[in-house]
Amino acid sequence: MTEINGDWYAHKKLVMSELERISSRMGMIEKKLDMLRSDVILLKVKSGVWGLMAGLIPVTIAFAAKAL
Image 1 (cartoon, rainbow, N blue to C red):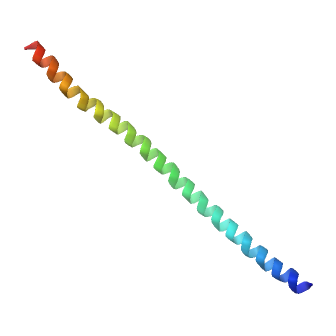
Image 2 (cartoon, rainbow, N blue to C red; image 1 turned 180 degrees about the horizontal axis):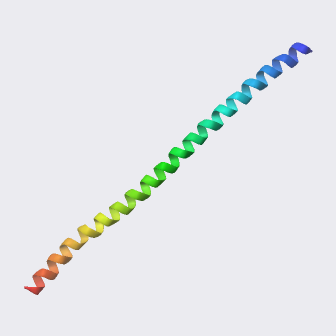
């Protein structure tokens, strides 16, 4: 009976260490995911600004052509 308890304790210890490893790995993945979200938001803002600037070029040319 003691041998069974010893085997169970060793297995329990292994399972707990794996759960702790997985938990720490998940924490790292969550941090990286948050960084990627921030990068995506920044890229969306930049693309909006560039799109606005690119859209203003033909409008400015049209207004300049009408003024002449």
